[in-house]
Amino acid sequence: MKIFKYETNYKRKLFLNKKEIKPKKYSEKLKNEIINIYPQIKYQNILGFGGAFTEATCSSILKLSEEKQNQVLQDYFSSNYTLCRIPIGSTDFSLKSYSYSNMPDLSDFSIEKDKKYIIPVIKKAQKFNPNINFLASPWSPPKFMKTNKMLVLGGKLLDKYKKTYANYLVKFIKEYEKENIKINYITVQNEPNAVQIWESCLYSAEEEKDFIIKYLYPEFEKNNINTKILIWDHNKEKLYTRATQELDSNSALKAIAGVAFHYYTGDHFENIKLVYEAFPGKLLIHTEGCTGFSKFNPNEEVKNAEIYAHDIIRRFELWRKWLY
Image (cartoon, rainbow, N blue to C red):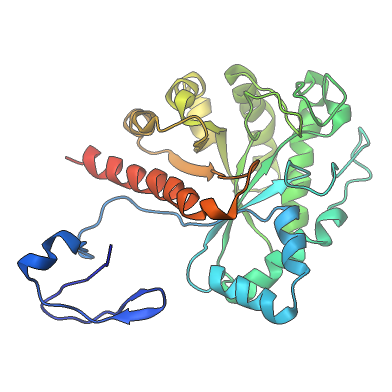
């Protein structure tokens, strides 16, 4: 489909495939090929769009020539990406598993591993946009803190290490701030309802809420950290249920800034609407959606793009519908 922008006073240029499309006068022949854009009509506020600074991505970028690195990062960050995710420790997109500490007193805490790939690429991106907002998520606490003594295959955070883990996350935020990377948002756990063959950890709604209210939020206050805490960070089908289970008290409403979600189990857009209506002051942030991650086929790039577009557009349309 060709895209035309028709305005009485044509002031803006529209590009498709990097070629300027000159405005065409309206005609009956074109009526099925027009997308109307009305910039004066506004709906929801958007924090930003972005991707994730994973070790896999960052190490790949650093293998490029300096010229290509700058080209890639300029294309993403000079005008497009403004809100990006940073993993706390290793993930399924890491070169190998690691934590920042393996000692109960955290005396060996270090983000040195991130300084090899992730932090250098973030700093390069900041040259094109110094105002990027960052959201950080852990895939697992250090293995010594967990019931299964592994980073992988689920397990749970042991009660005796909840305060230590809160301090661990505080240290992460402070160490990144030393690198001029401010963590604006944090989730407690990536996909807390899934046992994965990669880094994972299970939290019930009660366990996540308890950790935030009794340990993480108090440590943030004690250390003057204003990073906003988000819950869930998992699929939409249980978004409303989880939100109502955790945002059920004044202390929870004070400590929890919003709800994060993924898109892997289908649309379930009604759950976003329900959370917004039940907790209108809380943030709703889509933190992960990945296509072709296990069976990537370059011939399916258009199909994958359509999957992303479907999810983004439906969320925008849903918001528009709530307002009437």
